[in-house]
Length: 525
DNA sequence: CGTGCCGGGGT
DNA sequence: ACCCCGGCACG
Image 1 (cartoon, helix red, strand yellow):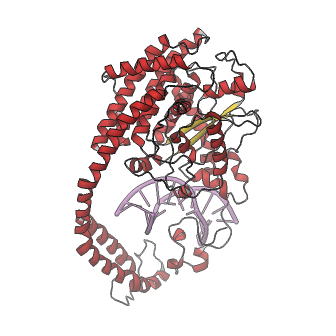
Image 2 (cartoon, rainbow, N blue to C red; image 1 turned 30 degrees about the horizontal axis):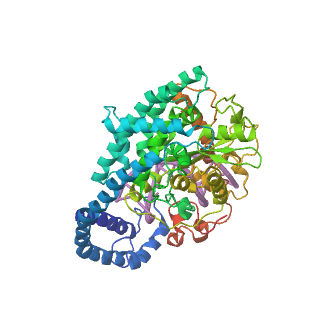
Image 3 (spheres, rainbow, N blue to C red; image 1 turned 45 degrees about the horizontal axis):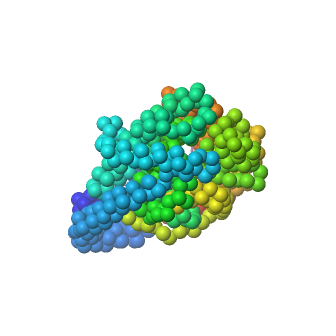
């Protein structure tokens, strides 16, 4: 540490010095080397910098070296030793098991609509039992993921891995069990079932690679958006597996002891399990999941997929494709009895909403260990939309667990898959260019934390896992618009900027942005 | 060619 | 996060 500091400091100092010239006051000698670019006027600069810069520098140095270094080291160690481990252990493992288990059971899938509860209950318990009897599956799960998820807390790691492994086996289990035991989709066409199986397999893989990353951030249900989102700040959100949660969501009504939001570990588990139970049922979701996978994994971001009913005046938001389909089918299309029959018509009436938050992962890793982070950050304009929709979803479905509800705290855009469909709530990036000052929107494109993508949702055609690449491509295309806008540079601001105003000589007077060759902050167009 | 600033790299 | 710079598009 010490060394590093010194090095850094010294390098800094030397740079400054070389740029500003030697400490000795009036150094008449020109400074061609100052910035690499010989500038006659630059000779003007040195004295100035010296006065403030150099002197301060030295002071700083002393302070740091003598005082800071050692103390900080100590502090660090202390932290690592005492603070680091204790909290994590009790909080993680204990709750993880107890709560998870409890809610797992309680969380037995209760489909809001047509599904018969008892069947699921059966399956559930069966699964549970097997689960407990069974041990780790030799199935190699993505270690990297789980590791990335929880790096620093050993206890946690174990716990988590265990969990994951178990989940895996559960999944496997379910795959077998579900298809045989579950009659949930009694009337489903056999061909579909076959496809489903494939898909399911794919999904298992997908979920394996994806979910371990998932760390539900401890967030409050009503959480509003993080005001600092545009600064790259992380926003609490769910992660890629959020798609799963959807299923567990409805269950929370049946579950008296809803997993406490603040605890990522426990909430994580209960959600995963139930979710897996349904994958065999939900092919649409599966396909969407497949869709998700490439990007989220690549970007190490989190994603929440929701499905919004486009029926006019409805706007219901469900977290599963099937759910929304059913909703449409029963509510809007009026096919109550035949809950399972899907002619695919429904998907014309809903759209997929994709919430994406990059850099959440980082935030998560730091958040999940402890902090409940209850404070809700300032919200920003666009949030209203999401909020209202969310609340809608919540009330309608009761499907959103506190967690899943917390996820959408991000700004999100909705994209209609079918162009001919009605009213996409928000426009697609491409159109952004029209914004006069392009502020509100262009920002969202550029800001990494949020990405929007529309994905075709068609429950009727399934795909084998192999087609993942295609999907990825598609997705790339879809999500590219924002990127594309980058290619089209914004028409350079006309007003005078620091450079012009102050000139090269007074570079120090420039706004920092200008100094960094970034968009001027002082004279904004 | 000067300027504004994006993208990316270093610390 | 801060700092810097290569390089590009615009005028």
